[in-house]
Amino acid sequence: MDENSLIYGLELQARALTPQYGESNDVCFFIATNSLKPTNQVHLIQYEEEQGSVQAKVFEHALGEVWKLNSCPRNSRLLASVYNVQKGAQVLTKAALFTLPEDLNPELKSEYLPWDQVEVLDTEALGERVKTIEFHPSQDTLACVVDNKVAVMQRAEASTRVVAEVPASGSSSGSAKHTQHFTTGKWSHHHQGHQFLTLQDGNLSAYDVRDTQHCAWSINDAHGQMVRDLDCNPNKQCHLVTGGDDGYLRIWDCRMAKAPVFERSDHSHWVWCVRFNTFHDQLLLSSSSDCKVLLTCAGSVSSETQVQPGLDDSNFSGAEAEERHKLLPDGLLQTFDQHEDSVYCAEWSNVDPWIFASLSYDGRVIISKVPKQYKYQIIF
Image (cartoon, rainbow, N blue to C red):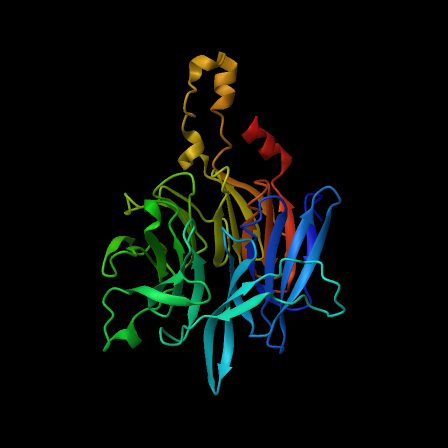
């Protein structure tokens, strides 16, 4: 076992993990279980680095097995869940918003902490299978990816309503059943918050949510097989990373869509999750059903190759200037292989840039750190 890692185990299978984005002081993550048993769970875990321990708060998720979790960047108590529900012989995938109680330490004898509020979103009119609910980075807006639509929802005091829909290009009432459904989607960190990125089979598209017919740009056949996940570089406009069933991790510049600007194929099976480090975007996390989490460096195409404003080589001696421009070498830095099942999620902490968590299907959560030798090279 790596000395930089700590294991937290769930009793049930799980495949949903997200940082508590609204929390600015403590390293916290939400995990949700994916079991066919009547009651599923949401765990809020807090990593205590000095003690080397994890504190957990457990909530009941009685609506169904959870496939996706997202936390709100502006409200640490707000969480979005995507879950399955049985309707006769049909299985629907729906979504709900959960609000944590203000007091996380009530004097209760119950096994689970109570939610302050649970709001099931009305998505049945949009389609049968919700893929994700994405919180806008800076506005009180949600995007719901369902079947071949993206519904943009404006948060009101007590409810949510649809204000725009972005259908898949070419879909009409007659051909909608034959249209390839979206896999997932994510808000762009740039473009004034007006672009929403979608994955559809092997293709990547960006839609301007102000104009439901406007596809801003697209990258066709981004991977030889299905694209499973994407992430935007928060520090470098137009750069995003994708991971697919072909085992590749690729970084794209959406202005030059013909070929990726960086790619690696270190995984031996499907890539389920890819994430830029939000502080040091030369660092990338990826997880796969090869049971591994990989730490990769893409320094040559990162924002960290650029000189900081107000600083140039005249501010430093020759040796210091050479050291300041030193980036980690491109390529695979570290393999984390403590998981024994498919790793569906890997997420950086939004509080500490050197800590991340990964989740495998058997319910094992591993909190790991960037190895010290790479950390010290980056911060000099």
